[in-house]
Image 1 (cartoon, rainbow, N blue to C red):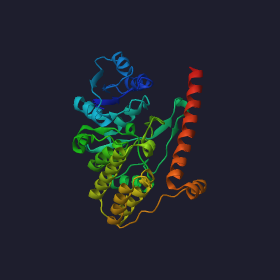
Image 2: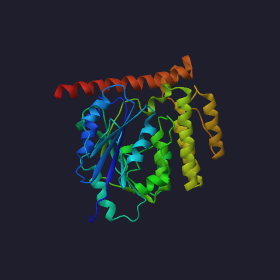
Image 3: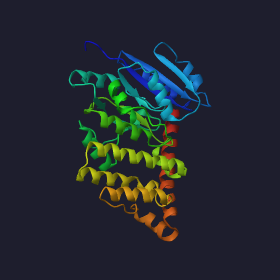
Image 4: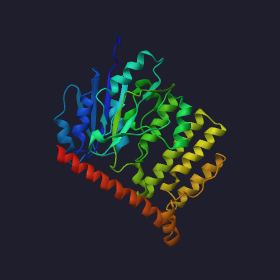
Length: 335
């Protein structure tokens, strides 16, 4: 490659003392030679900033700000980035050593600076060797409209670190929406995809998503304000898709997307459920109560819908916590 573009690796961080060192090492250890790392500490109250200071160099810049939330920290990082391409990286996630180089090498074969690069991601708790790649129909080259159709129909997604985004695309998409929503990345990357010429999937690149740290799927216990933010993100995602394509298949996919997310609001937030139902009707469809497995249907019959929902999510959280604690114990034993 005649001229290798500068890549900015942008990391928002908050109370990440347990993970930030490993995350930074994965960013600094990239085999791609032209990269800068910008970390924004969003008002951490633990040792995160102290650890970040030990990594400062001409390649690693640390910026501090009062706590304002993940999207605001990402916007701060983006405002300081000098790169022609942007690599997002959450404070507890990791990049394979050749993740960026494997995506950058395709620049010579694609036309235009609005092509978006994606790659597989694998989930893990603590032991990277136990990471499991998440498979989906998104794992191929896609037009923007096809990406939305599969994402909405299958409730599929890319983890934020999967993407490599050009500066041009970042400018067209605009800043992160500074609303504290558990799905802030979903809304942002819907905008990025909608502004793109298409997605080029790079199977040999990979990143790692550390699961179990209070992500989107724990939002059922969040405040009404937070759930309203999730709903507003959903509405925006639907709007982004409809601007690209307004057809029978796109409207059906939008209804499927609303149906898949209904469980986070039903039946505890009836005002949001009514808004979701109205949007589905506008799209020519209808929303039905979420389906429950037989044992949760028994709980529902005996104690009502709220108890069934609490039981379902509580079981998942206890199961995931047990798996995470076991994996951590083995990880520490092997250190």
